[in-house]
Amino acid sequence: MAKKFQRVRGMNDILPQDQKYWKHVLGVAETQAIFSGFQKVSTPAIESAELFKRSVGGDTDIVGKEMYEFKDKSGAPIALKPEGTAPIVRAYLEGGMASWPQPVKLFYADWMFRYERPQAGRRRQFFQFGFEVLGEEESAADGELIGIAWQILEKLGLGQMHLAVNSIGCGDCRESYKKALLAYYKPKQKQLCGDCKVRFKENPLRLLDCKEKKDEKIRNEAPVMLDFLCVDCKAHFTETLEYLDELEIPYNLESRLVRGLDYYTRTVFEIWPQDLGSNFTLIAGGRYDDLVELLGGKKTPALGFAAGVDRIIEYIKEKKVPVTTEVIPKVFVVQLGQEAKKRAAKLLFDLRGQGISAEAALTKDNIGNQMKIADKFGVPIALILGQKEVMDKTVIIRDMNSGTQEEVRLQDVSEELQKRLPK
Image 1 (cartoon, rainbow, N blue to C red):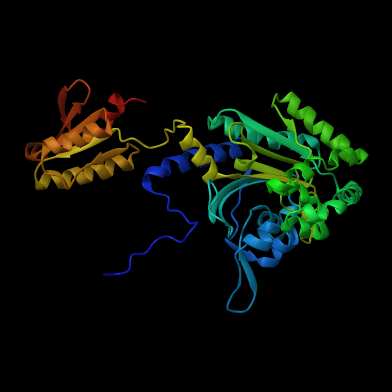
Image 2 (image 1 turned 120 degrees about the vertical axis):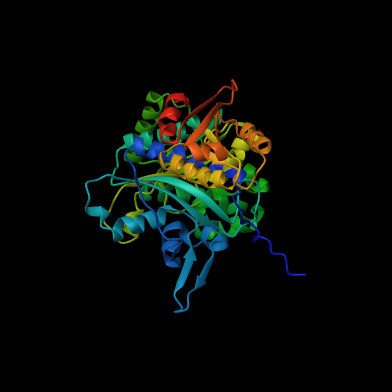
């Protein structure tokens, strides 16, 4: 017996019955992008590994534990992209977008890859859409971007959401905070988990990003970043919250929210369902005002967010949110006889070419069986072709609701359908 193959762990097929969810979610996101003035961009699945080490941070879980990194045949270190922002910034610089009128507003929808334990809403190959704004420092942009994220989830009909927002300051005020954080954690080092012992030495801010239950009490009593913000960062964050108030978006100040990537500055935020908590974050992002310069460009303020499509779809299914993006056929072509089958195939081809969604069962010969299939599709109209209709160049139009039938000339079918079909 031949070997039976299975998909690689953490990689999922998207089967026909699930396609409607993907079309729905990505359709809402892309429509929001168009309405908000964002241009779509796509970056390669493979990038230089150094791009992520420099931007995301070499000691982050994403780069240190989860990134698919390997060498190509020339020996160059490359990686499957684990996140979307660094490639967008690379494309912004390499594609000459830094010379465009600023800000540049970009939208992407791409596959990402991380080697981690597959779990609820989290896979090794996963899909994200993201919104990025490069070249804008005003807090109005923070408010607008969070508003876009909030509206997308509203339009998807996902119910009550929790918006967590914080500021992690700029490089200057963050140094003062790091000193206070180290002073607080130093006598508690022995109580920390293994990862946090490393974080204490290499990246103390990420001590607040620890998910271990045993470290929770220590983390909750740590100094608060908001108390260390410089004058400019405090003013920026206050204005951001004022914009959220104006937009009437409910938010929660989460003083321990830092995000797990090194490039973030100032505003950071996450949105998750109120009934599930922060372990099921759907959208997250913030500012990264230093990243463009870090990757070889001029000092450029920027911000963005990413949304996990797999996780959003899982939540839609769990909550049984109605999704109606499938194209339901409006016409079913029924045929009897070999010549009628050929004519039906041509009619089907022509109708679809004219933008009329049509279906048929050309492999079925029994009219009764074909009509049962038409009933399952729920089409309002059936077109019936037999030998007589082929000879006369006519078609029988049947109203599936009333059962009434009328014979019309083949050349007039399209015009008659336009009159009868619901708009």
